[in-house]
Each structure stands twice: as C-alpha cells, then as structure tokens.
Image (tube, rainbow, N blue to C red):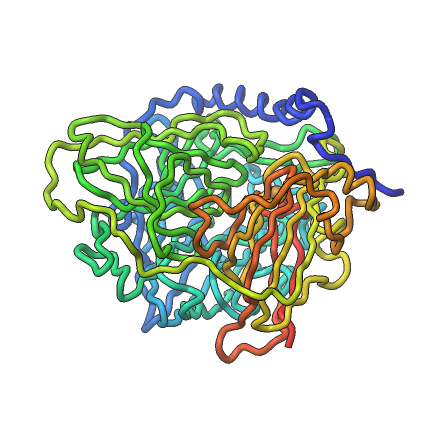
Length: 565
Ligand SMILES: [Cu+2]
C-alpha cells in the first residue's frame, strides 16, 4: 500500500509541536527525576587536549591503533560515573576526564594508517535502545569508523554502502587517511562511528573524537605565520546535549509509538562541553582561538558569549581567505566554526556561553537548552599573543566554476508519528536500488537539495568539501502536488518553476569550503563540488551523502553516490 507523504509544516505548528514534544516531556520529567535538570552548573573545568582530552599517541611511524571499548567517568560531581564507549589509543585513557576524550593531530601531506579494533560487547546494553528494523544484524554491536571530512578511498571511508555490516567484536577496521592537499588542509575534522542503522546510538554512546590537521602555517603553536592564537590559547569545544538516568547512565528515550523504538530526534536536557556537564573555562584577558564542533545528535546550536564578536577564520573545509565577523553562530550537527574571540576587554569578568533558538529560516523541534558553559576571564595575560585580527588568511574562498551536471535531490518525511515513520532522499530508502548520483571523476557538479519537510536538515557529503551556492525560496506544497510519489517526491526534478523569489546568497560565514550544509525548509539549497579522488585511487568508488541529524541518517535519509570513471 502506498504511503502518503506528509510534511510537518503542512500540519498546524501546534499539532506538530505537540507530537514532537510528547516524547520530550517524558524525557525531561525523567531527566529531572534523575537530577539532570537540577545539576549545578559550572563546577568543573572544560577538559582540554593534554588536560582531560588524550592527544592520541601513534603506535608506529604515521600509524595509530585504536580499540573501541567501554570506560566510565564522572561527568559531573553529583552524578555517579557514566559508562560510555571510547577510542583507546593504547594509553588506557587514564588521562581522559569526560565522555569526549580523544584528539588525533595530523599534518597535511602525511598519510596516516589507522586501525580500529572492536572490543565492545557483542550486543547492545539496555541504555542503547536498538530498533532492529533498521539494522542488518539485529542488536549486534557492529562498528565502523568514518573520518568526517576525510578525502579517502571508499574502502577507507567507513561507509555503509561499502561495508553494510560494519565490523563485529574482535574485528579490526584498517584505513588510510590521505591528509592530502588541497582537499584536507589545516582544519578540524572528527572521526565517529557510522554503523548502519545505529550511528545515532554509537555516536551517542561516545564514539566520536577530534582529528586536527596542521600545516606549515597553522602550526598550533604561538607565534605562527598566520598571527592567530595557538598553544594553550587554542581550544577545541565539542558541544553535545544529553539526558541522564539516576544511575548515571546516559538516557536515550524509546519511541512511545507501538512497534517502534527509533525516535525522530534526540534532544538532551543538559549540555556537555568536551564531555563534561556544564563546565567552566578559565581564560586570560587576551585573544583565543576556539574551534567549535556541534557534536549533538540533532540539536542545532545558536551560540553567543554575551554579544562578543566571533571572528570566524574557517569552517569544515579549513581556513578562509579573510576573517568574517559573526554575531549569531548557528551550527547544525557536524558543522564546525574556527573563531577568534578577544577577551582582553573582559578582564575579571564572568561570561556565559549561551545557546539560543536558531533564527528563521532555520527550523528545529528542539526544546530550549540555554546554558552551555561559563567563561571566567582572569586579570592577567601571561603571554600577550596576537592583538589584532589578521587582515588575510592562508585559506580558501570556495569558488568553483562550470558545473557540468545539476542534480536534484529531494528530502522527504513520511508518516511522521506513525510506526512507519521514516525520512528519505529522492523518495527511496538507503538501499532501495542502485545509486542515482554518479558524478564523473573530477567533474564539478551542482547538487540541489529540495527540502519538502518542515525542519532544517544538515546535509553531509563524504569525500568532498563543497561551495554553498545559495538558497532559493519555493512553493514546496505546489511542487509536491505536481510530482507526487509513494514515498514523497522522487529525485531528478527541477524545482525552479516553483521558485517564489531569487536565490539568496550564502551567509558570510559560508564563504569557505564546507562538508555539511543547512538545508532549510521552504527553500532549495544549491551546493557545488568537484568530485576528485585521491591519488592512486581509481573510479568507480562508492560513498554516501546523508542528513547529519543522526536519527534521520539511521532511518533513512541517506543514499549512496558513485564517483565514475
Ligand atoms: Cu535530517
């Protein structure tokens, strides 16, 4: 029987809000009962690389060997220790303070060979509710690590189109990360699990880590040729929302729909920064470089520090050509912002990093969660460091030309709040038929993501970084009425006849290369990429593109694409 596509924004916003907030209300109440909502804020420092975050030690020349295993840490003084899953570099992780605790430092041009060995349980524990309708092997823990932002061969990508079963307990995934220029310049990438149908659970459980690429300019030390803060004045900040059970375990709600376990989006009631609940950050009154990653499952962040200007110097695809002042830092899951913040005028002050509701046309059902962390500004700078924002940077403006193909990709949501509820690209499931997006190697292509749902979806492509070309308002309802399908609008149809205005240019902070883009409702979003392959890797090579709301990715807003000869 044909399913009927319905868009949440066609329902009354009240009805949609009620349906979504129902699970949340249950979660909030439980979380409060578990003291989640009452945990005192700003008691512990933010873990930092070398001080609570383990900087991974290589296992040989340009090689790393990680074991995925369970550890537990106290993420807040008033919580019992929380068991979670971690990448162990062989150190035993004694120096890891929170639930986010690993950073690999790579260098452009130097490939790394990396091994990941599964030493987690065979089957999922109770605190990770598997929906076996979505998994290839029931409730078996199947792992697969993906380097998000990596320019690698398909068999090193950790992608479920190549390895749908992932890796079982005792098995080892071996990959080669090229770190080649210019595709992997100095940047903040991250590696995280990508198990088919369980990415949301495996990432939630803790399988996520930072991957920092350096080059001859972005050395990470101070002074450096760029004239930006470095050393102790460069701080990665990974923001993740969580709920807790009374026993200290992470809480991931089950669906209240009969026959379903999967939920549409996970939203937490407390915020973790670098794996600690509502921590504080001591800074000196001077300039800092903050490298922010939205590591939430589904929450779109809109961060501010009391109106302090963020000078954004880079995003997912590395440094920009010039800094951009940003007042509202809106980051969807997997997006990164590399920013310089000047605390010199705040000596002795206590600031709070807050999270606000994202501005329209970004749309998310996430309930409010305002506090992120406290920033305590000291009275003396031990090193003055840079005092001006550099006028130029050694990075890139995304400026690709002459696309040879334009592809039209629809985002659909089917039967929300019912047991059959799922999301999709192009009206088909992830594994329903062969790939339809098949760019020729080294071709420049425009991909148009047509949002027929009520919410923003952060779309992520493996292999490439891309240029955001723009967003065009359109009549989604009329487009859908003109091109109905059993599971939403099929792909391949140009929505331009349904445009209701001109294409809007990308935001100033979208000037660089990106690997994740906010695809907002009411618009179709055009990106442009060059589909190169690493040296020595021959086409065809298979990758995936998907929504990085990991609940959506798991069910089933993901499709393969193939780079062709
Ligand atoms: Cu999505």
